[in-house]
Length: 498
Figure 1 (cartoon, rainbow, N blue to C red):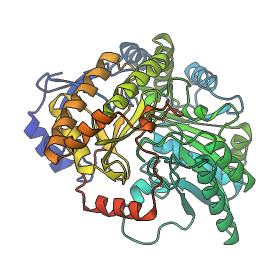
Figure 2 (spheres, rainbow, N blue to C red; figure 1 turned 60 degrees about the vertical axis):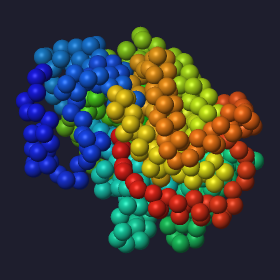
Figure 3 (cartoon, helix red, strand yellow; figure 1 turned 180 degrees about the horizontal axis):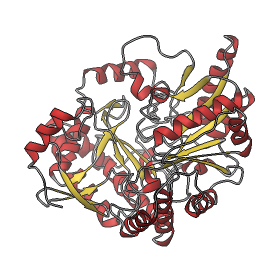
């Protein structure tokens, strides 16, 4: 499709007609994307960009099978779920086949935010309780109920003391969190924090309806929870009369490679009470789903209020969802995520030996984070360097973003058709840019020392729970963490979030 306006005119019209809080990527030089295919996006001049960040275009941009499925159904019928249609029940059946048997009731909606909002309603009705436990740095959606449980958002606001029914537990981050990789049992230590929140809430006469967490924290900085953490949390929460909500909006549908759902990384003995999904479910088409147990579904019905969603589960959405499931299976995209993701993580881990700016490489499948630091011992976040890197990569026709509480974690979550060739290309470009940055900041002398002495003991260890090793196993005291925080406060921040 040809452009209607030139880029500058598009910018002017956007400023005039679109809300000012609706930001664009690369605000200093916004991109105008006119088409996309597979793992590539094309601007108005025909320049091709490698997309490393679009977890929405899960099976690849403009996948022909998905496009055809939607178009065929749109030619026949699109209506609401109050009419019987085979697409709805067929899709629900196919989706449930990927989940534990106890998760057998579906509610179809249109976005991850709608899904998480409905999950809260289900939890409130089933338990009769109100309070929610969420993780620090979490993001669960843009509607009011979810902003309240998203520290990633509400910590930006200055007013008030926050919602007293929302309790924030530490993010289970073993690189930068309260309990780090040198702790003998971080899963228990982090889950005990949740237990303490439950006990303190109970003493105040408050009752917990649910604990909600992304199965792998994305906006929080590509955080991989330690094995056993969810099981222990679920035991505490259920013991207090609450339920466990697993948010798979960003990380579901085979992205981790070894499993279809990221919560399954915790082991076969763990099953959430409610699972929410979105983004990749429709490969860019607006659809999402909440799946829960029969008991919770019956409780929701017992409220006496009918649940109806005008567009949720419509025939076109379900046809598209079925096509996405078909492509994942037929093209072995889970296998590709595992192979290419492991290769990408291996290449990035090798770069740690060369670049002192890389403090940690962690990930599972095609969900990978690279944390940049100015000092590996103090773990001082390299926020400015991370932002500089992603802008320089854009100039090299590679799209990558940075996130996390300090905006210093490079986020890889590309379309699942991402290849080993793509991985080599992006890592080579990162190598070039980091070399330039380290020379400019004087960190290249540290790189020489690392190369001469070899990688640290931790950098040589095997992959740990999908988490690729960071350097050093030093114990970090409070003074180091205080200095780390003070440094971050001085760094300029540009937010690029997907």
